[in-house]
View 1: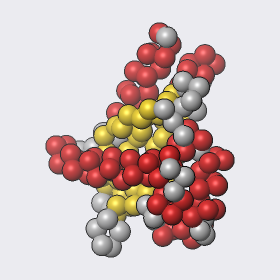
View 2 (view 1 turned 90 degrees about the vertical axis):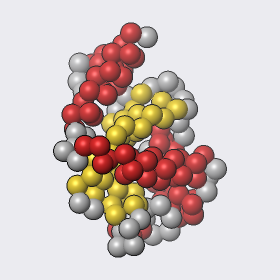
View 3 (view 1 turned 30 degrees about the vertical axis):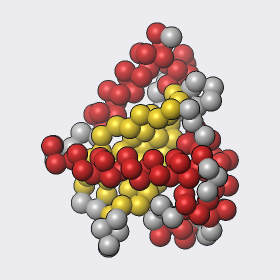
View 4 (view 1 turned 180 degrees about the horizontal axis):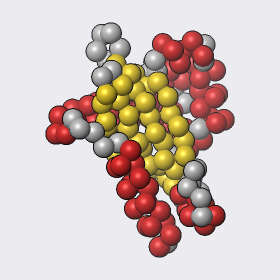
Length: 149
């Protein structure tokens, strides 16, 4: 259990550094918007609502994953901790122009911690949509092997 706590603290520190933004207090609304957007997609995944999850991604992702079922299959196969997780904790958002980054710390069904680094893009109509997600391996496994990449 102590490795889990140390791993969580280490992960939080790493991502706080990565996501530090000079924008400061003005980040509260973008953070809330990003949390709401990611929560909607997580709920769509939980309901296996492919169209709902797909509606929250950028046009660029829709060019790569040409329909909701193809997108949902990719997430199910390659992003299992995002697709099905037991718990999530959102970090702060960092905004740089029309790009926002946010981390989500996920606990999967095997009690493994994962970090998901999201990139969101502001659309011409002002809405934020999800453009990418980088999933980072479980922290506990990284601590046991002495590697954090």
